Image 1 (cartoon, one colour):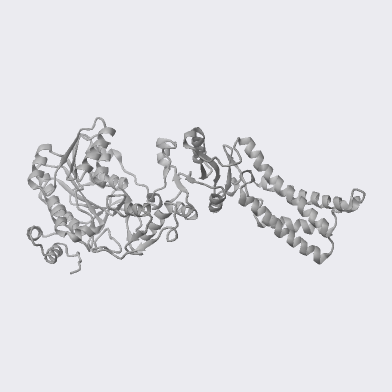
Image 2 (cartoon, rainbow, N blue to C red):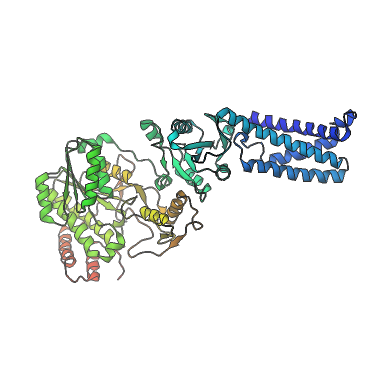
Length: 609
């Protein structure tokens, strides 16, 4: 690249001497040889210094002239206009340069400098066989990265004419790669040049072709092209590429999960297979966001039988069809039932005799449960009690409760109900041979009712995007990540533990909204407004994963910790549950009385009267 820059610089210097000689030739004629080639005069060196200085200032030696666009030639014109003006001032002050000679000099030099740069573009187009005008039906693509992955992306685009994609060039942060080629396409600059290139080249799509790129780097790049209405795609991660290779089907849209900067989840497949393989597995709430992903991952470990239990038939049917198509040899059963129905649950357990139970059935929408708190108690608390007792009666080996960070110091009924579920499984664990454990984690991206699908719908409808508070934060994890760690925690289950998943750093919801808007090709609060609506009933500014009383114990997986169980008075707890159940089933429920009864069981529960 340095050779190319030096070559162009040498050419420009040569053009300056030729232009100066040509101007003198036209002015004085061939007979005045000494005047024509008077290169020893001071004025030629001053003109050289002026023009080369402005060529450098306007970056005429760092541009990729093989793929030059309007903006690049515009800078040539600007550089010449300013250099000519400064040269004129010098001519006026020094009186050493004839004005006619200066005008001829500038015209000749402009034609040669511009012509040389245009020659590079013509040569490149002839060599690569690409035309000079935009192919109307093709998407123009800019690739980020100039390594092996970028080469594979270019190769795939060339191999697949049906994609209607045209590579315009690449960018890379290594300055030494600028001007180099990958399969005939030039590295046109660094990420700092992206916005300029997107505009000047009419880019339609940007593809991240750096498998190891960090989330913070992706955020930085997305911010650079924010509001420019381009699609942003990415290649898979390093491990995915090693296992599956790379083709255009694996190149996907950049998702918000790519920007969270989480540590990659690693699980021990042998350990999970050890307790899943050839076992009958029951997943309650198996049609929901977490439950359905549990079913997908469990199916891959060859259970003897997988039983999906859900009250909502549509979701249950969808996952049934999906699993039946993906796992032809899977023994699968789908049961429509409510965990509230104790008699029905007992019958189902007696019939299927599950070895392992994953209890994911729950009401989880905080504002809705604030409006109907008795339903959270009936479904979450006593539904868990029904499934737990049935597990004991039928000698279930392991019972894994899906819990939430909202159970810690809860400010809403949903969170308090899940804390009671944790307390129930710790009591039940003492009463039986079944290993009862809970796995506690924060929000999962894309789950039913979560903030990401809501933001996407709001963006699709033109906004505004609503955030309850500018400083509100939440822990986030993808659904597959969370479920992988739940399965891993199940292997560690010895009874009574509350496993806490490492959720990384909390994320500001407002920043999440900004990034999602940018991913959609808009500029936050310019193209798409973000509206702060105020905290909803029962909503906290931030969530915690541990209560003050709980310690933290390590497991072999650094992303899974164990909270120390809190001692409970079993007799008092049983009496409190009986009282709570009676209040929840009253015809005319006194919500304040119900919340006070909850607070007696969960002292850390704080509510507004």
